Length: 273
Image (cartoon, rainbow, N blue to C red; front, side, top):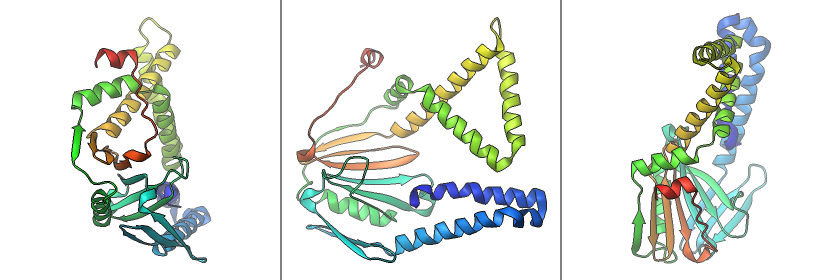
């Protein structure tokens, strides 16, 4: 449920604007169902979070979960290959972090254990894991790229297609919230810009170029915010990686569980070393 909590703003905002434009009767005719769904999802998410308990010591992580049927689990310390703390921007105002514990038993897309805790709890868990006999050790080397290096990396790795998808999703969702007037305004602005930029070329070609440039700029900003503050630290028994602005991430990987390292470098990035 937690992966879709941020999407609840859509039915809530739609019900709010419907109530403002159509009155209380219009709100009752449809938006009340959205409100009930919101209440149900939030209630289930809270119950799921409230029924999750964990305990971590030098032996491993013990946890219990379940609303109607209680289940218990245990992950031994020597089996933990990755410990991660993530702070998405939509959770930072609530001072909530997501903690992820992984072993080599499951594929990378599926976590062995994920749960939400406060900033203080996440910091304590992170410090405890760093001081564990299985991961502690002196820092052998550390690398933090300059801001210009991050900018160049974002320049050469940005993909216009990803930016276009993000832009289209944003416009579509905002159109559902604000109504048809917002879509009409976006299309009108796009047409006017296409005509303004169509110097010696057809407007449709200028419009296509405008979409590609806008998508690339969005992808560039997204990549820049993802890689800013990047820091990599190699200790005796672990590899620590942290950084990010939109989602602040910290990863601790055990060296003994790293099977291989894949280093890729394009021609453009090789020119800038």
